[in-house]
Length: 61
Image 1: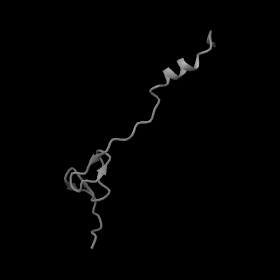
Image 2: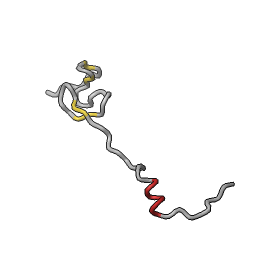
Image 3: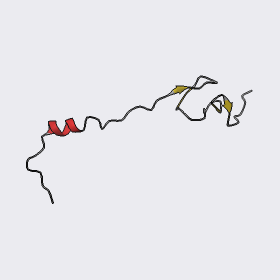
Image 4: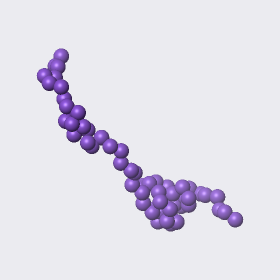
């Protein structure tokens, strides 16, 4: 089995890991109600997707 010839320094290790980071999910506005939702998903607030009602929601009185 291969063994490293020299110890990898903390700096070099950390430079290699610079892109191991969490990114925030992108959000878009719902075309019907304007709520912020994840793209390509039915809106939780109004039930619309691509200007069509896909999920019937309870109407508030």
